[in-house]
Amino acid sequence: MATLKVRKLKSFPAEISVPGDKSISHRAAMFAGMANGTTIIEGFLPSEDCLCSVKAMEAMGAIVEPLEELEGVGLVKFAITGTGPKLKAPTAPIDCGNSGTTIRLLSGILAGQDFTTEMFGDASLSKRPMKRVADPLSLMGARVEGQGEKICAPLKITGGPLKAITYTLPVASAQVKSAILLAGMFAPGKTTVIEPVATRNHTERIMSHFGVKWVRDGNAVSVYGGQAPRAKDIIVPGDISSAAFWMVAAAASPGEQITLKNVGLNPTRTGVINVLLRMGAHITHSESSGDGEPRGNIIVKGSELNGTVIGGAEIPNVIDELPILAVAAALARGNTLIKDAQELRVKETDRIAAVAENLRRMGVEVIEYDDGMEIIGGSKLHGATISTYHDHRIAMAFAVAGLFAEGETIVEGSECISTSYPSFERDLNLFIKGDSGAAPIQVLSRVSRPVADRLRSTKG
Ligand code: S3P
Image (cartoon, protein in one colour):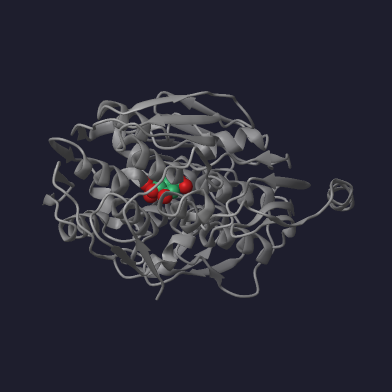
């Protein structure tokens, strides 16, 4: 088991470029694998989660060529030549690792294939509810078999001739919405998902990028069956969920300033900026559009933070940032209430219990509710031993908390961080050891443009 030892913040980097967006990287790999032709993906997040999606598409016939590798980060650029929407049957069960996005989105794609596939994951993924995708996909005509009442992984999916449905999501989940829309691409007619609360819209945006038509009417999103994605190069912006760790570190440090470069600014993901603004942070961002996903630099200036209420329709927009926002709340004056966030209980771990437990270990008073927690702000944090429960966002949120604690914070089980932010420790060291703590990231290998073009022309 790896451990991360964190001491009090000593210096402040002027800027950080966070790695690629996790949600967009998964979708880029899946759409490139289902497309006719070759797609070059740049800025890919080579985390364990996203590589599961790449390997899955490769196992089902996509040809994957690595084009660029960065030291300490991994493969950030690929050429993927797709099979077209009808994939090849894999010869072995698909390993989805820790990744809910891989297993749920792939379920939608596999529902439309004419073969049976098995998917499995690690201990955490095997406890997460898959009934939420099994139900709508079964209504469409696929057979989805899983374990127990919650239809947990391992899953066995037998694709079928699908029929279009109109489905109202019982939980606000972009993964479930995406699984249905992906299956809808294989169902003749119009498949509609009604989302009571808006969730991230990366699937809709990437469908447009790959030439798949869809429409939105109020809170209903529809896709027409029988469309094949067309290959088109894509540049993935940095992940705002990863940037959030440094946004909070800066926001809670009066007098300091940081620039987070080239971060995705899709409005369905920027709730963390709104919450921090409400808490009194000074945040500005420049914006440029690119590849259907807005992106830009975020500048955060530190100040005294105040408590707030986080709940209602903004929850899906900040769902992955709630652990680090809970840390911001502990550093703020006054109390913060997080409500309507019962989905946190079925993430990589029960994030309400894990956040409450670890905040208490650091000396913070927390009242736990079924759907959230109240955090009593303003107490002095002290170093503690943190249990991550194999959850990357718990590990990173409490590593950042450690920057504000007296004494040493030991994050036990920090290997899970590679799920979403392989270069996190390097960036964290910028705050502990200063700029000298990290050498510039080296390009370990790069396929030259002519070779990349040749690869593309022979496969396209
Ligand atoms: C994701 C959607 C969210 C989020 C997860 C990634 C996605 O999950 O928590 O990290 O890429 O669609 P839900 O859709 O289950 O809320």
